[in-house]
Length: 63
Image (cartoon, rainbow, N blue to C red):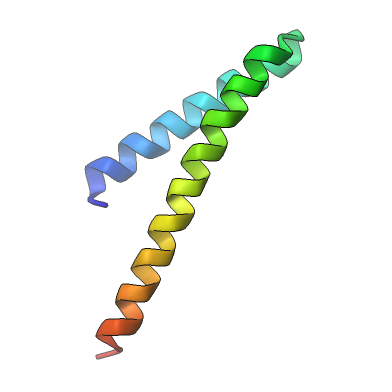
């Protein structure tokens, strides 16, 4: 993941989190579920990318 992809993912995750919180506070629980799904999807992608980077680091070794 390059820097531009990271920034875009971070911005979208922040926006989705904002809208999730706004939906919860206003009582729109169906929309909150929708936003929660999107936030969890982004967190899962971030977790997988972190694991991939860790494996690459292990494979390359410490220099």
